[in-house]
Image (spheres, one colour):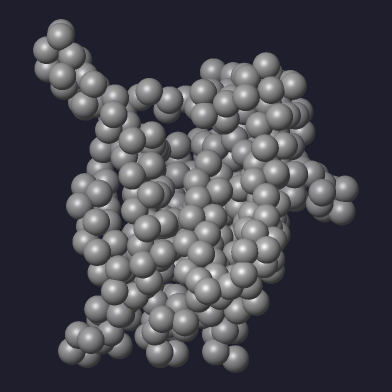
Length: 385
């Protein structure tokens, strides 16, 4: 029952939010941005404007921006655009598997995304209970689930739900049953998003710590298990090499490549041409107040995490550094929200506050309202993160 309660609360919140937005935006009879958008620079948006029946307009509650790429890949494969290789195959493969059953790729991808965006909730609670008492873990679960970027991007057709569920499942199964049990979800994580493979960092660190004093043959055999997710990642790169003649197409073909990452901005700052290119780029990047909050707050949370679990702190540090160096800083609130360990010490600190229950309730309510605002903006074509 303790695991079912947060699941049902989040499910109800998403259903209520979807109904409110469907009515508020009058989606039953009026067109929203993604119903009539242009074809996109690579034609990816054609999957949104031509592949959905008029009687299934509710699907547009979950579609927009990168959803068009996943839907296009599920229907047309990766060959329709060079840029499509920037999107990992986990979500399109799951959507394609359910396509026949649900009679439509859009329905299949929406069903998969919504389901994955709910299933991670009890798994997170199980992980949190390994570090917090049951009450605090329950509050942490709701606090994390209602955080605006997590709520939105585990509701719409994005790969974040698959990534979060698989990384959480890998860590939980490892802690409970050992390294081999974690290899299947770790392999799925490796095919979900670029940082999916990084879950191997805490798995390896904990395994090496556990192996102290054990004989060499047993240690080597256990470490060979790591070849399973590494092989799944290699097969994806091999597919890119065979189909596109580029081993690193998932990293080379992203539209954000070399654009508004920290390394790019610093390069502009110290270039021989002076500060103007840097200032021009900074002005063009859609930064938000949330970007600064996440970029400044994440190191503090990682420092607090060191007292709870050093392996997860190392994992969070590597993920954070990856966002800074390679990720678009304008998307940092979304990227950093899905480094799940950082949320554990935050809930722990909030639980010690006076009237912590009332505080958590107020925070969850404000998060929910913010998430609905972001959801409505997303449906109207605004860049969110």
